[in-house]
Length: 338
Image: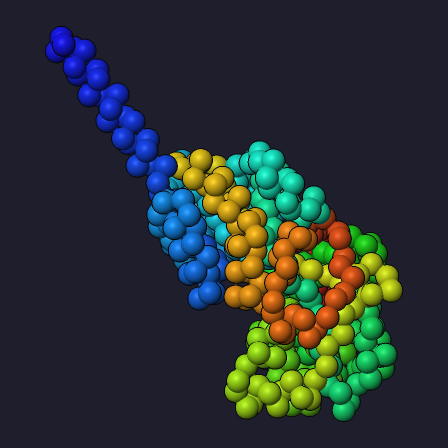
């Protein structure tokens, strides 16, 4: 073999080895901080041989990091929670469109966009103190602004993405004027200044600090599954309502992700996203963090979710939540919900 031919063969071999090695790696930036996800990732590597290099951080920090890294970013996939945060990544131009028949088939259209996908859902439910509030008083989100509940409503900050997404859904359904009136009604009913997280609101309701609050369903499910005596006492004093069952359905939010624009391992990224829509991965989401799978055919065994029972879901497209995110913040600010 001539020296030039031998050199060319060697270069091609190195290129093939490099491409193969690249295919066996996935660089994941994740804002999901759930210990149970470890099994999810380990199972992907076991199935595919693709090693996951994971960087975890807060949502805003990861978005800023990806933007600053630009074309040199090693990140292949971003996973995070809340449609508003996924929308922020889209607005920054961080995601790349993904074409996948598998994802389009398994994930309902209202739970995906062109460049990011939902992989689990959680509902924004009403939690009330059984001794202070009657269930019929809080059947709808709109009821929380009723003057009859003055001094009884607790919430986390209006600037938190969970509340912004709920407000975005109200804007989408009812328009800005009604949404602002609702926000002002909520503020008028505050039992205290917004503070803490969703678990704090549930505990405040149980303690009688307020009569009613809103919280993501998986926080309720965690307390239901807890072995701690204090958590059991909390759940004895509160009850849960699926809001708006006779109208548009209960607002849901999502956990999801997408492939990043400059992903160096694009094939591995698509394979990982498709894996997250598999039956096995969907069960990890549901059983591990008390969320619902987005794939309707997947059956899960979660005693807390089963105890909460079935409910009518608001099928507003997640893209609509993204569309009204900024307006939601403006309305909350004007209403004094901070």
